[in-house]
Image 1 (cartoon, one colour):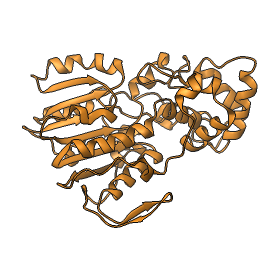
Image 2: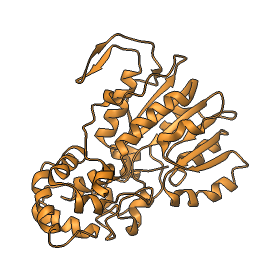
Image 3: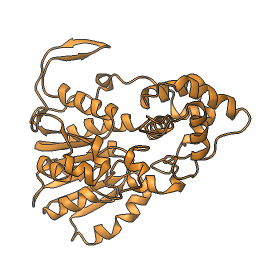
Length: 341
């Protein structure tokens, strides 16, 4: 499972809490795993959700794009009596692994894993100095590539939208000035520059670099695009009655999931780019009354759960709809290929 770690939040300041599955009881209640069912865990991570699903008797198809997670899951595969298969791939490709007849359930835990945060060499955290990397798949364009090569206007949009950083312009211009003389190479290097531009105040709950690091991580790994494509893939892969359960930790992620379930509920809808369209057959029916958050007890035990939100739906028999990214109203940001070239 990719148990999300809120970079710079109080839990991060107080030290890591590793490998605690977030909203586990709520996930199992919404997913209803049992013997004879086939569940796909799209974000294997340390195997938290997968282990619990196996304990309930179901078969699990687990995915992760992090090769370290795949290597770490071999022992669980070996002990699963053939009920677990593990695949190195992005969860947006989950429909490719659905058995004939479809899946009984899909669970997605969105975001960076505690394992990735804890490993300085992965470059996700400014609290552990390491290379400015942040690539979950350990390949492709890195955060250093983005910081050192992207246009200032692109950095402003990345920091402003994906990080909701109010000082995105000031930080981007300071990055441009500094990189002209010396490129950014480490996490602490970038964090120190941001703190110089935007000093931490006594009332601040998070480090000044938190939102920029969040934005870079989301951008480098195309997390919002991956999530949107995974939702469409789950719609195609689930059998009627199958359940889709998604846990998010960021407002942008939750907005995408909420919008997807709203669009697929059969209600009349539209976006700012498209006119209203007529109501159509629902492909998902909601589970419960909407969003589920962690209890105070869980948030006390596992501070990472404080921002967690769970949404779930049950697949109907209606045909899957077209994968239309415009329903999410995501902005056009500079492409990774352009920045990395």
